[in-house]
Structure formats: C-alpha cells, structure tokens
Length: 197
Image (cartoon, rainbow, N blue to C red; front, side, top):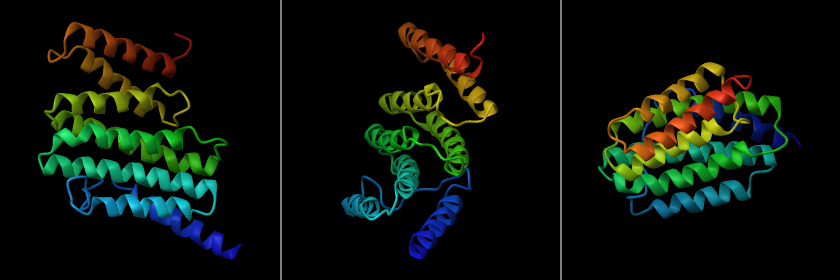
C-alpha cells in the first residue's frame, strides 16, 4: 500500500512538473531517430506496470505530451510529413484520457492545465507548419478536443479555441468546402460553450 502511495505521489509530481511550462520543448528521440522503437517499448512497459487505472491515465496523458514534443522535433528536423501519423498517435493517447470513467475531481484538476497547454501548443505549431496534411491533422485534433463536451476546459480557453476555428473558416488558403466545414465546427464549438443559444 505504501509503495502504491509513493509511486502515485512521484507520478503526480513528475506529471505536474512536466506539464507546467507552455513551451513543452522537443523530444530527442523522435520518429526519425533510428532508436525510436525503444521509446515505444519503454511506453509499453510503463503502461503494463502502472499499478492502477488512475496511473495508467496519467501515463497516457504523459505519452500525449511526448507526441507533441516529437512534433516539435519533426518541425526542427524539417520532417513535416511525419507530423500527421504522430498526431494520430497523440490523439490515441489523449482520447484514452478523455474517455476515462469515472472521472475523479483530483485527476480532472490535473488534466485541465495540460489540455489548455496542448491547445496553445497545437495552435502555435499550426501557424508554423507548411505541410497541408499536417495542417489538416493539427486542426482536426484542436477541433476534437474542443468538440468533446466532456473535455474539461475553462470557458476562456474553449472560447479561444472556438475563435481559432472561426478565424480559420475565413482563411483564404482553404477552398469553400473546407471553409464551410470549419465554420460548422466553430458553430458547434460555440454551441458547447453556450448551450442555450
């Protein structure tokens, strides 16, 4: 029992330190690196030996953060073509976190600042990336986070995300169909924020 409490305490401290900064940094071991497979093996064992469902969720949250760091590294390495599959892995981890039931209040309080940081980082990367498929993938993940009404976000951050989608809906870089789709997403996002309107 004491061992589980100590592991949980260390995990909470590690996670809160890792997610404290808005600048999440870059991963040294990224999808282009020849030893990247070792990271996958490590994460498999981290999940396998996580003692409780709560620790597994915290690990998944940490893994999603690692995928964002990898995207930053891919930007630096000029390998934007690998951003799309990395973002799919990012969403796999984050979706596991968001669909976890039952949601403890303490865990939710940990998740909120992480998600808010993720949205800021995703938007920052979005404006830096040139690869069209990467841009679509980034925009899609921002929308998925915002569209999920169970996503614990402050109203200010959700509004900022909705405004991002609204701004993108008027972007001249998109065709009329893409603009219409994004505009519809922005409206749904605002409906989640103001359900009575």
